[in-house]
Amino acid sequence: AKNLASEQAQRLERDKQRLEKERILEQRRREREEAREQETRRKRLDEIAAVEQAERYREELTENNRGVFLTTTLQAVEANDAAVKIRGIRRSADKVSLPASLGHALMEQEASKNKAMLFELHSL
Image 1 (cartoon, helix red, strand yellow):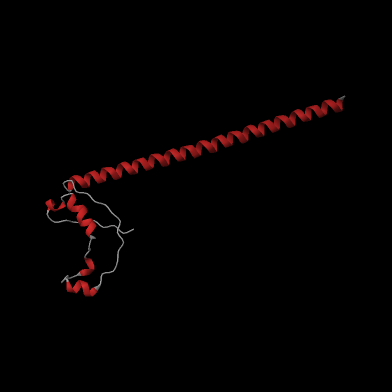
Image 2: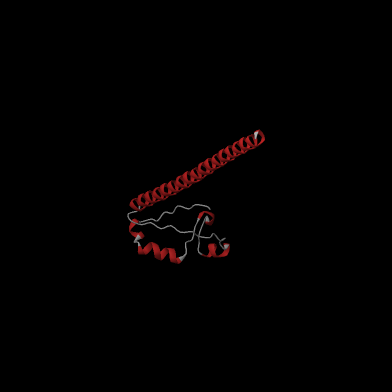
């Protein structure tokens, strides 16, 4: 009878330990999940803030340029030295030639009303 009571006590102790271990594992899982959700929320908020900042910057540029704003990605190609000389362009290393389609897009926005057109270039 003592042996049976001892085995039962050991079984109860093992069950308590198993339940405690499962409870701890579940708590850790919930904490990890909550941390992932917080990170996802933080990233989403950062993205929203970046979009809002970009929009404010675009609005500021548009206002400064009297309603003209154009952004595009172009691929740089090396200019033909002979063609540059024929056109009479000096200091061609600091010049940019825009595609005709961009010129049309700027004219549709009546960019010429602002006199000289200045451009901001960024390297990717």
